[in-house]
Length: 326
Ligand code: PBG
Image 1 (cartoon, rainbow, N blue to C red):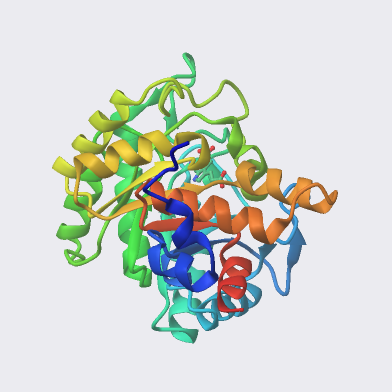
Image 2 (spheres, rainbow, N blue to C red):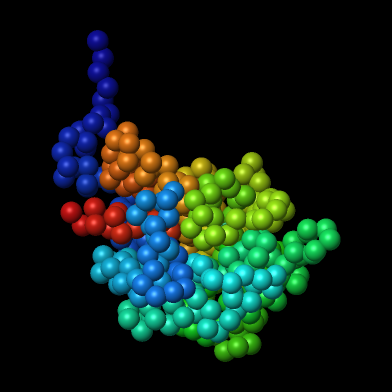
């Protein structure tokens, strides 16, 4: 009878040994925490499909941002829920728009905390699409949308955003935003591009949270087909050529292969967005007592990091940061 010579179980016997050979360490420093900011005074409106997450008026958003900062989370990602929408998304680039006001307030309260602003038009468009829609055809127009996106990014930088993050998926938006930022004197403001953003059903709860569901059609003419991975590399390559400073894959868990492939094609920082539907699934199962929430969240986030993302945008950020500190 012969026995195996090489035994991997030797280094799994104790917590100290497992720690010694652990390849991936999750830290609060890896996280970005998304916050939905809404107009009004003292508003805290829970989002039914995202237990623990609410639309927050600026005073509460500031408190939540401070809490995240206190837990060692380096940044927040702001989404705006405006009170008015139109067909030019004017709220997106209004200097007194909800995200601009929230950015100023958070930067004042916690100057060290990074404020990242989502650059998109869907929350501000009456039809809910991420670009300008041609009335008769219903087509989402690419090049006219670029101007509005660039104005949005510049107005957010003006308000003090540390990083702007375009999530619209129009072609050429990184270049358009870069040149507008440079022209307006924000040549040091980085762009975190949602480079490979899929047309995903996992955004469902977000659309309730941000009140941004398209009123007709869907986003498949601009967001990526979930079946494609090579195309993600093309998207990432274009965004890098256009000047992206950080690239992103979104969603995260069904696209770990894409995260890995992007990691292998660029040495730029890589972010992954653990989206609302991924959060909702865990919360629903944990709420029913079917999963151990803490263990599942830390395992999922570790998996995203192991796949190659060093920045993880996640609604679990404050909980995960607390658990990591225990
Ligand atoms: C806006 C945007 C969306 C998300 C981030 N930015 C929704 C969408 O594209 O429909 C989704 C985030 C999430 O689900 O957590 N374009």
